[in-house]
Structures are given as C-alpha cells and as structure tokens.
Image (cartoon, rainbow, N blue to C red; front, side, top):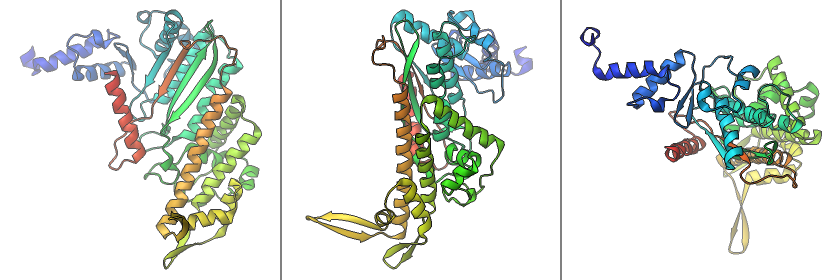
Length: 422
C-alpha cells in the first residue's frame, strides 16, 4: 500500500498524526509531535470547524474569518465550573480555569495573548474578559451585568477607537499593547480593574504606509459626528487633512454608529461631556497641525498660511505666536546665554509632526490613566493581592519590506515572550 501511494514513512506518519488530532483535543498527547505534525494537525482541525486546540497549557486559536455559533449564552453556560476535559477546547474554558485557579489556589492569574496581526487577539481578549466577569457572578451566559461590569466591558470600544487602525493585513489592528487586571473581592465578585498600555505606534498619526489608515477615531469623528460638532471644530472638509489618507472620508451609517458607540462607551465608563469635548478638541488640533505648511526662504523658513496654525493653537488653548516661534526657531543654550537659530524647512516639518505625535500619545496616556482611575476598586474593598486575573493583549507581529521603529519594538517584544514561555 505504501508503494502504491508513493508516500514515504515520514509523510505517512504526519498524515496519521494529523488524522488522530481530530480525536485529540490536546496535541501534547500526540506521540512524535513535531512542528510539521503540529501544523498539519491544526490545519486538519481547522477545516473540520475546530478552531481551538490545546497544546499542553497553551490554547491555540485559529481565526475563522467568519461568524461561528461558538459564543452564545448557551455555549457560555457549558464552560462554568468544569474540568478542562469535560468540554471541547474553547477560550471560555481557559477563562473558567483561570477563575477557578484564583479562587481555589489563592494565586493571581495571567493570560497572555500573542500572535500575528489579524490572528484575532483583540476579539479573544474581549471574549476572555467577558466570560471571566460572567463566571465571577455565579452564572455564565445567563445574567445581566452590573454597572461596574458593564463599564469594564465598555473600555474596549474606547481603546479600539484610539489605539487601533486599518493595516494591510488587518482592518482592526491594535497598534499598542494593553495590560488589564481584573480585581476581585475575597468572595470572588469583581470589584474593579487596573489598566496600563505599552508602545503606542504614534508615528501612524503623521504617516501611514500605502493602503493603511490612521487611528480609527479620526475616521469615526469626521465620518460620524454631527454637523454641529464638525462646524464647532472647523472639521467640515474631511478630505483636506494631510495626516489622513488621500482616499478621503465619506460619512456613512456605519461610521455614525461607530462614533455613537464610542460616545456611549465614554459615558458609561464615566467620562463627562466636558472630557469628551476636550478629547474632540485635541483630535481637531492634531488634524489642523498636519495642515501647517512652511516655505523655505534662504537660510530660514516661514509659514505659508496662518489659518491652520491659529486653529490648532485655539483648540490647544495656547498662544499662536509662541507656537509658531517654537516651530520656526531653535533655542540653544551655550555658556550662560541663549542663541536662537532659524530652522530649515525639513526641521520645521519634523517639529510639527513630532508635536502632533506627542500630543496624541499624551492624550492616549491620559485616556488610559483616566479609565484606570475610574475603574479602581473602592479603598475599603475586601481584596488581596492574589485576587486578580490579568490579560496581556500584545500587539501583532508583522514583517514588511520596511518596518517602522515601533513595529521593530513590537516584533522584539513578541520574540521575547516566545522565549519566556518556551
């Protein structure tokens, strides 16, 4: 039979192992597990509609790129206070196991989610957190959430709006890493959360690769906000901003829905109307800064038009002349005296872009810090250091012909994580 099919013993072994994997939920139990056998087994299970597979303590998830009936309340109810072997592999099983381990072993739990861009990390993190919250309430998939639980869940639309963007590989790619720590009372009920972020890809504010976009929030604002807001912040001409792709932004029902979802999430988490207005003002400032243009005249540069600079200064609530002076000249301190040197054209443009990136990065940091403060447990909460479940949702690794410095850092962080866990 082997001769007739022209299969080598090695290939035949891979085929048999991959076939056996359909009946084995944990590939660590497969004899002779190699990288080839692992890949073939995952592919076989994927084509059979089984996107989750255990490899020891690791859960491998393959993005199906289509809706699957795996996350209904009825399915969630199956993964509640179970042994891992009781049900097929699932992200819910991992969440339930983390909660049980925290409660029974009195040890903090951490789930690390990593993978290539577009692998489904962001969605997996949301599903994991939602199921942990459900389980902590004593019933999975069959109850309504408390206000605190709803606020924790609602941070996702906020962070995705300000920290995610469309790339060549993924329309909703996280351009930052986040670490969310859920905190629990001794009784096991969630009582708060702590949030921090890492390596926001701020360079995307001023420059995107071909076929990519800036952060979602700019598109949501220009294509979904009401005309009165756009007029208030001088944003009515959505196609005129240099920091955005040349394809333009057309208002659509989907963008309006996304913008309204963001506003609702901000309100639920605890941001005031004044906070939202300040956020919009900063976004408008960044867009108008991108339209500030310079001309070179000999050994110095000058401003082409004062309008975009004045608009940016107004939204930033700073003096326009001082802002212009900071862009056109450089102050150098030497031997007790200050010398002012005129910047060249490329230096002025670099100063403008650096300011825009710094403003957006600081705003994102303020946003995360504000969420962290709003979701903090009460000072008198009956908690312990062990009563926590954390999720590290790290940015996806990518490999382009030309990678940004931020992407290099992202890829390095992923490599270090692989070394740590393997």
